[in-house]
Length: 303
Image (cartoon, rainbow, N blue to C red; front, side, top):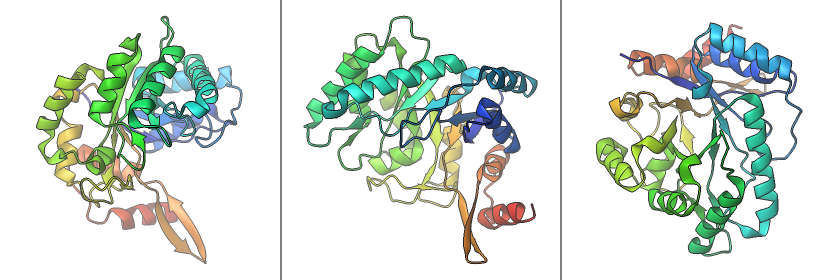
């Protein structure tokens, strides 16, 4: 039986670079991770430190983390669907792809975009034309279009992603990132995941699934709100998430947690703690932790 490929979002910091990402992932007992190469809300980017990157690769090798399973997430401020920001979005996405190549990363998750004041059809065609500009024939990075919740004017249901892939000229560089919270909030029934996967395969192809964001949802199915919840505490049953994580057709697909930090008020200050070590333990043992939030708080308070 192949080992589960499971990790979470981690922080990429200027002073520690990729080494810090690997160390954080290992502290959660993860064997993969996802990171932004800079703040997702702005364009500030530090120069990539080659020495730190080389140390990170040795650390990954020593701890059996395969770099091909590591995911980079593109910044939120890239919106290919809105042609008013076309030049900025295309240029910045190209820069992010270059940073991925410099770091040796091969998968970049991208939100397809929001059409804002344009029609849905115009937004989809803006995405297609932008990706045609961005994707080079010799590009080693695969862009994973993320499934979205359908909040506001954002694009990213299966039919919309299918349209994008079908119309991009060099679409061999395109993959898909499934997000369980987004799929639930978009209206897909994850309790019948085999049916969903059948629909996905017919429209897009299972071979294009590059990674899966594993998140519970604070909302009922079809709410179109995109509010992540900790594993087992939302509207997606714990057993349903396990059936997705351990689905035999998705064994080689990295699973990434993006669940919320756990907060606590202490001495009039709010402290937040990462849940990933405990959620990964739940997933590996296939057993829901009824005291998840309290166990997380106790663990970090003792440090």
